[in-house]
Amino acid sequence: MKTSSPVSHRSPPTIPRRLPSTPGSSLPSRIPSTPSSQIIATTTQTSTAESTSQSMSARLVPDKQNNWRTLVVNCNGVIGKKAQLANLVSYTDPDVLIVTETKIDGTVSSAEFIPPGYKSFRKDRKMGGGGVLIALKSKYPAEEVDIRTDCELIWVKISLRQQRTLYTGAFYRPPSDTIYSLEELNRSLEQLALKTKNNKNSTIILGGDFNTGEIDWDTLSVKPGSPQKVINEKVVDILDEHHLTQVHREPTREGRLLDLLCTNNPSLTKTSNTIPGISDHDVILTDSYLRPQFVKTPPRKIRLFSKADWTKLKEETDEFAKQYAEVHESRTVEENWNAIRDHIDQIIDKFVPAKNISVRYHLPWLTAELKRMCKRKCRMFIKARKSKKHSDWEKFKDYKRFVANEIKKAHWQYLNEILSTSLEENNSKPFWRYIKSQ
Image (tube, rainbow, N blue to C red; front, side):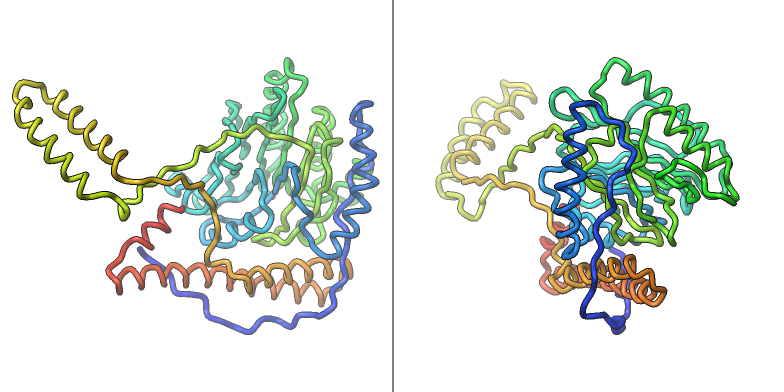
């Protein structure tokens, strides 16, 4: 296996001891609700706002509880960011990730960067540019929706409880693109409307990097002097035409709200916050009142050959060999193979004990110190966002780069230790255990 050298260590930036906090972004003021959803919306704006304002002072990521968690991530290239993406997933525990600017093609397997326990649906552009991806937990039944468009957009259908359905879309509009991508997005939403017209219980969540940062989402108007007024107005018109509400309010890159999260059922949105990302974009973290179906994974049975009764196993095998020698010439090859296979299965069941294990995913290289550094990074992000001081943002950016390097270095050191141990002890088990976990 080819490994790169670990990132050289350097001292972390100065870290302030006392860090103020700021609550998560509030829900949109404009929420069309049905009578039944008004209760949910009221609860969201009262109890949730109070609890959020208190809990967010201590942590940036709210408790997940039983909520459906969606992340909108602009990764600016997934190659080389496996460790950072794994850390983000471990820290936030999302149900689905909407990823833009993957910058890969078909020569790159999803297993090379998607954390274990998740499956992915992709639409690549080319190596080094564009691309979108939706990754969700493997236990959720899902399938790609057959909607063909000439833009960077993909839809996935996810089954919810009580015969409900969630359609999740990932969209990326390049900054240099004209209005063409938005027209393709509009066409896809029209096709999606035809697929859901007979199912009134369908929920739509559309997220991604729209690169339209001149929209005032409280008034649904374009800010004066916008150089891309037509494009920004087109986004507002498309969302309005298809009854979608943009629920996020905090900027995601350099004070501009470029990454959006839209839904046709905003009353189900509990909170929407911004957390530090893995590129120059921050990550949108949104919790919703949705309940998915589960595909229960049965426990895996493993044999404990170290505790096998080898004496009795050999005795029965010797007896089988004698019986086999007497009749094998009168049987076909298929019959002989079936007899051997059945005998092997039988003696293993009788003389080799077994135990059931459940699959657990963890990151052994993500140490307690790295976790503390990630939490410290989030606190610095909160302080910079609240104070809006250039010096605080520079400290946060420096420390963010430092933490990213430390995470990458820890991952490669872990791999190097596995390889060194395997070579020195002539034991390949640790290596293959790691490969299998991926």
